[in-house]
Image (cartoon, rainbow, N blue to C red):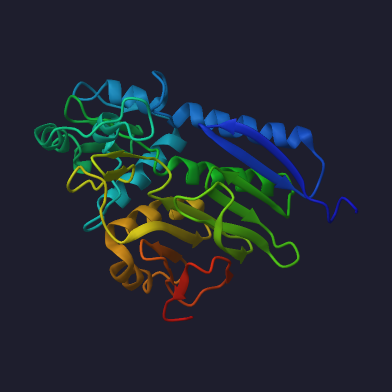
Length: 321
């Protein structure tokens, strides 16, 4: 097998997730540079340690604006715009609620209703004040916290894609723990598996073949805990402060940019299948695969990918099936 047809895999653990890079070339130096780039962006954007540019903003809440680097400012501006869409389930200011629920981390618990109500007052995205002139961010109330966890992986995946293009890589794949960004089209396209919710690690509902596309999946099975027979997952509804409760087990977004995948998986969770499909009719560049609790796989629109159902427990539906 020649280097032009063989796929080389490189892996690392970053952002708390296994990161996988696939290249049609044996180039450990390039892989190392890619992982270093990811680490640099993680250091800028994380809220899971005391120091980062995002944490600098949070520490100054209610006190003063904080000037940040252009990439961080641009990402925050994008996140705020998504947060201000009508009835948006995306909210960059949801940090206080995420921190209190701690879903997926040690110490998770169901907060008392009065505490949820109090924390909701600190999550208004309109109180994230942006100043384009000096690229500064000001949180107007003490206790406010922005959290870019719902958008950072997509942003970083796109930066890795751009870097690989600059390095002359025509075909490759980067998987940032669920955010997959592909370059080029090997024969037959890249085959991306769709995970089976609440199952073993390798169990797949189906597979889709894509080229030059991002595939982002978000599911209620990723981080959750159970209390008194009720499942509490990590996708919070910024309108109520509680995990979103609808018919969905997972949403997969197929788009050119992975950042759109991050934003739209959250938007689709807030809308549900029917409203989500209606909203996507105005966005032919973005497509969705919904997996419901009743084991339906719903394809949103005329799809520019091939989907193969692999699990007989599930049934495929949608206007284009």
